[in-house]
Each structure stands twice: as structure tokens, then as C-alpha cells.
Length: 185
Image (cartoon, rainbow, N blue to C red; front, side, top):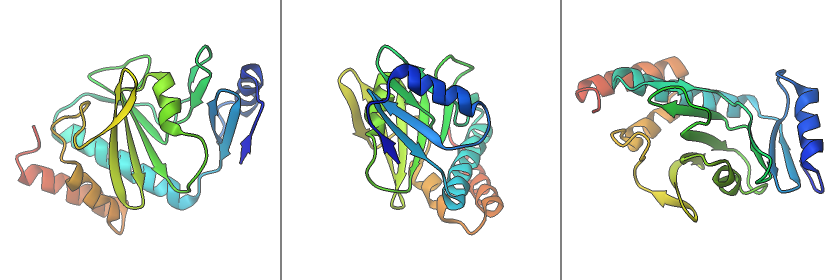
């Protein structure tokens, strides 16, 4: 569901009313507000993505700070988002280096434009069983074959485990594959 003509104070008020309780995820871009209620399948897939990425960081001995779907905001730029998952690499930071979005439907606000205004260095989109990496440059995001935030990660290997029957099976298999390769970096 999208609403037009929503002011920044109205957006902030809606966030305050919802509070920290579960509810629709909100994305804001210059007066446009998108509300999305994630389905069970969407949430299971984004959680699997998070568990796999965290397993990679553990095996590769990378400091990864997870912030889940924290609300990112920038009032002067008219941007607000709640990523499916987001992380800082190398230690805690005010804003994440990486946002992950599991795209379940088409249309809606341009998430990359929202994240550009929030200064997120990298956005990973999982859409139609395909993982795409978008790296922030001065004039916007560019598609990339590799992650710059996690340059040693084999994205094809990670993506192959997103299709497993269960989360536990996927994480165990991914850890075993990483260890068999010499554990990444």
C-alpha cells in the first residue's frame, strides 16, 4: 500500500505510534510512504539470508554487527527505510554498511534511491531467485559482480543455500562448504 503527500512529521508520527512493536514496514521517499506487511515466506527467507551471512562472518572471522530491520532516517533528504536486514562490518557504526532486501512483489518505491539518500554503502537485492549487488557511488548505485563490503565472499555459494529445504540444513551445509574451502579469506 502506498500513500502520497505524507509530510516528514506525519511519517515520524506514524513511526512513533507503531513504536518498537511488529507492524507494517515503512519506506519513505520525499512525501511517498509505502507500507508493507511481510508474509511468513518473506520473513523466513530474509531470516535465512541473515543466518547465512552471519555464519560466513563467523567462519571467516569478520566482525559483523547486525541491526535487523532498524529504522534508518534522513529528514533533510526525505528518506526513511526499514531494511529486511542490515549490518555494519568491522564494528558498531551509526549507520549500516550493508542493507539486504528480499523483493517479494514488484512496483513500489525505488529502494535504491531511498538507500542512496541514507548513505548505505551497499544494497543486496534477492529477487526472483537471483542475488544482485549494488554499490554506492557519488551519483547512485551501480550493479557489481562482487561485494565491496565483504570482498572475499562467494555470493554464488551463499545464494545456492538460500534454496535449501530448512534454515538449519542451509546453515549447516554452508558452514561445511566454507570450512571445506579453507573458510573464505
